[in-house]
Length: 297
Image 1 (cartoon, rainbow, N blue to C red):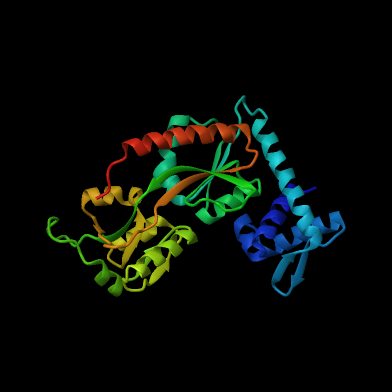
Image 2 (image 1 turned 180 degrees about the vertical axis):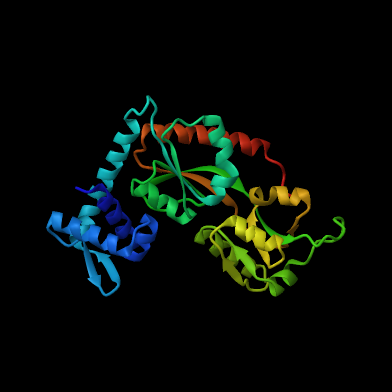
């Protein structure tokens, strides 16, 4: 049985979209359709009910899904435990923010052996990569909800409203958040759950309704704000140096209880030994970082 087709099936089952599956698998939509059809022919049953562009798991598909996921997990474990130059393999998936701000320091302490890989994905897609057997461990900015995965809290960070520094006296009063939010767009980046909580906190405080523009990279959201195109709500770790160098301002949000930004390790319920060991070392490293991190403004 084609393991590539199995991975495609698992993602299609979870997303219920061949178009979304094609994007996540870096395949054409025609290739996704062909892989599913070959798998259905091999099994002798339809795995999806198709209605126009809508696909839903059939009864046979729902029965086959946990088996496909189990096969991929066992294959992943076998590959990870097998020797390659005497070193265990490890496939890491990470959100862009976690990869840029944290993973370089963590991996520098690890001296990763040849064969380790890092895939940078949107935070919302990291759990899917672990579930589908594409990664042994993931690092995401929210706690995944699926019961077939486990998540471990590693780090918590403040979210700040950031605006470009106007070059005036650093000691003067900061700009008014309500005036900025009424006048400028808000560039957002991060998991959808975070932004639901942000918008609710702003609404409860009676501030102007947000005019968000969601971008796919935290660095782009930050740069747009620093260039004066708008403002952004970003994790402190992402803007710490910009605040220290005076290129950004942290704008107070009186009465607004913003959610906290998090880092979570995402693993299968039965993770591979290298993934389990790396998760433990990551937890220790993040704990040390939390103890020594600089204070936010």
